[in-house]
Image (cartoon, rainbow, N blue to C red; front, side, top):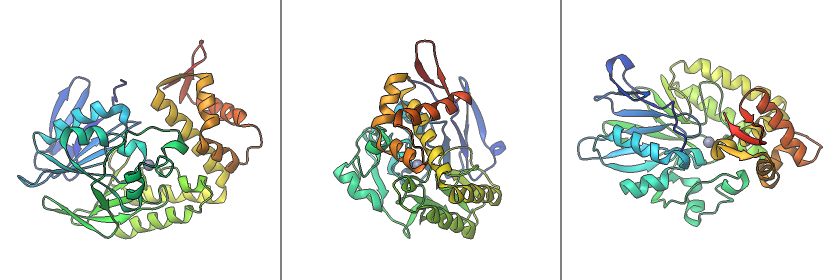
Length: 335
Ligand SMILES: [Zn+2]
């Protein structure tokens, strides 16, 4: 298993210098004993995991569980963050495989109840991999059991904190965010990163979703969080600047949807190699040619050539920027 080297724990409500620092091999772990929240910042491929600590006897709540490739590491990080506190519940912001891929392992280990976004509950109960997106994207996610749903407008109390559940359509139609108004902390998932936002997947299916992205960004602007904990990357405080960057990115995609489709094709290919870590070039090409959403990126990007050429063109761009590597035996490697 490839070990994610970029993870670290740090508090969201207290500055790092108020936390005790410990060194564990190559990784610095920061714990804030008085902080009601711990962020497990992960590198790609896993999304960040956020532990909301409860009052004594209440148990903790975990937001998102990372990718199944890193499930063992997720457990190790969780045990460290929980320090014996029971894990009562798991919530998923949305059901992309890098956000809920650890659900099955976490559920088997902690017997936690899993709550998923209301719009995705039926697909989880049926384990419909088409509706869940794992088949069209050619991605993998172990099956888990959902105990119920979480819907926009609900309020979640953990410890002394109250979290408002907000709809965040765009990147995913059913995605949710969590907002704690007292300290202005927003768990944004893939709706807002420090530099941009996640691929707008419904657009690849021909559904108008750029407007949904704009609405979600506008909502974040209205609630004006003091700190954002994104789905990927380090928590950040300069939210207006991040919103401006996201707005400019969205404007470029609205003006030229083909640009977004091309970007999405590269994301899908890079993600696939992150899952596989290494793969023969022919096998990667065959994955591309049989993955429906990769084909959607080709037609949305207006690329007239055959699917194999689309794969070759995007691959060349990823190799040129060292996002992937091709060795002498014609094997592709994630970098
Ligand atoms: Zn996502």
